[in-house]
Image (cartoon, rainbow, N blue to C red; front, side, top):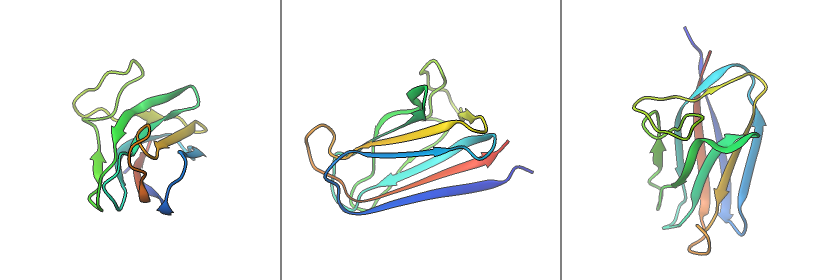
Amino acid sequence: MNRKWTQAYHVPGTLGADLSIIFTAPSDCQLVHVSAVGSNANNGLLVIGDSDDADEFLTSQSIGDSNVPAEFDGNDFVDTAGNTHTRYYPRIVDGTIVIIALDYDGAGATATDDFTLVLTFVEG
């Protein structure tokens, strides 16, 4: 049985700049779900990739507004060629540097307040 785990991040307050979260994958895994939200009506845009391709796993997507998270899963993730597929889950190799970028205001619109992000992975 594959082990499932989550990584959660919360940044309180109104963001005044873009946010970058970087970590190294602890084992071979697949990204199976992402939940992202701000506490206000915002224009935040989320991108997830690795150190070779910044949007390899999830191309720019709007996060949720007013405490209603946007969810991303196998219907939203992209393959290495940038194509979406029904039920595609990015495979991340042990030691891969994962990069998450949030454009806090969607290129000059409303800044994100109280950003929360939850990533769900399965091992293997």
